[in-house]
Length: 200
Image 1: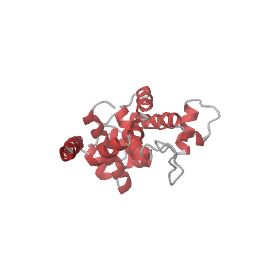
Image 2: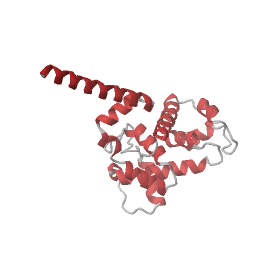
Image 3: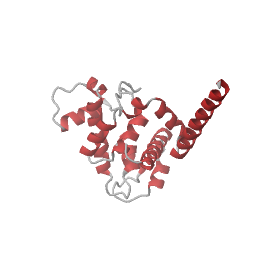
Image 4: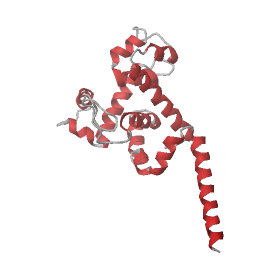
């Protein structure tokens, strides 16, 4: 009887492992899927807030979540090497711009460690960058490059005119900051991953 139970438990464990392996492989990113399953609260606790703030700024919530993943791995207390703060690693300069434009009185940069404030400021900044590149067939890589490296560099990488259409591939090839190129590519890959899986 004990031997039968041991075999049964082993079969169940093997079936669970096989199911996990299949689903993880099908997801397109088995390692991410594994971490997500091990710590669902960390990977999903801000989904509702991300969705709300993204829709308010007319952005796809999955794109905003991909930026949050790349910037902080969902850590609201992350402090960047150049003073960036929170989930979307918003700089003080960008945050003060957001506060001024949105008439947020008494703003303090430490408020960027609050998830809602950080997402509001970061998503506003990303939305503004998307508007700068609305004439491109796909403004996302241009806006991401601007979010990471600034508007003037993105203009240079686009060929300088800012209005002529340039292919996404050519633009990414023009990015002469390897870290920014990897940044843009990794967010686009994560965004596609989220879209393949469906709703957040």
